[in-house]
Image 1 (spheres, helix red, strand yellow):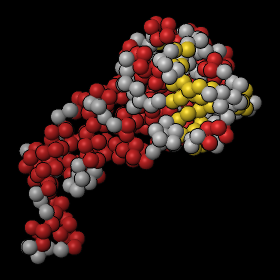
Image 2: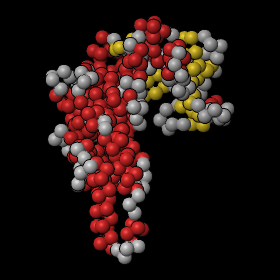
Image 3: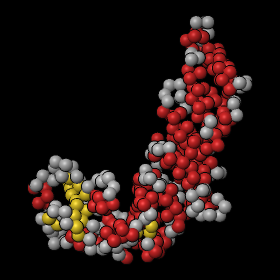
Image 4: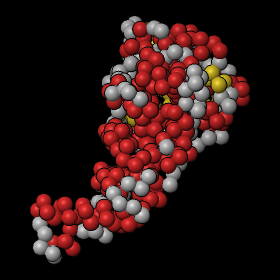
Length: 380
């Protein structure tokens, strides 16, 4: 039984990058032997186990044979006779097929180290096309490593174009597509993910509304100056979270005459991100009017974000707005000042005057608008 560190941990160490997670492959062992040593089964479909102390994943070396469509359509052989090289051969890219033993010796049967030096994302074998997830993973690695000049090899791009027109792409679930997209949005250059998917012809299949927006900008299909990608790049520069990045990227599609459902396609987006996109679509007119000093629109925006009770939604909206509408950058300071003015106008002070019910609510609104009008120097 031999244990090797594999995949991203080895790749990132060789690149001098922080190691995020460590994955291990075990050669020459059986499931019974792993369980006897205290490992716990982590997956019902794959021979992956959790270390009894570290909790890290240890997978038995395995071979895979394509037997059905989709990324789960593989028969798995994880017997003790499977070699390390056979396990590495089933992986996606050469840079992810380097193993390190417990003495620090590297096994690199597909020249992954040379590709690391060359900044090349290159597939290992023609079997690359059998798993549609690999297309998304390559796009995600382009988003992660693009700042260091990594690019996709011509041969791999050719296979990705082949995959984009195959029925395999149709097997990707909305949940899995969002999982990969979410991870890409967290990378340093997430716009490259969408660029790669479009260049190989996959984006029009997976996210057609976003593909259409990217193509409408002066006919340059993958120009980072297109509305969605430019907004996403600005969101990254302000270190925005996933919800803000998602909203910045998909707002142009949703606001360009597409219904929200068509804009995000099959993506099963998490609630926080989807809520922020819906809020941005709803209050966009008020945000633009606020910049013109309209007190009513400012109050509407503060109410929509519940800014008088909690800063978080307004802060997220301001980050989205900075990404989408940089020409309205002055709105941030204005709205933060407006919030402080309105917080001081409370129902308690009006109740002392004998007001209640609908009359109290209307007077409270009027007083707050007056306070905002004084701030911006005009009536609302």
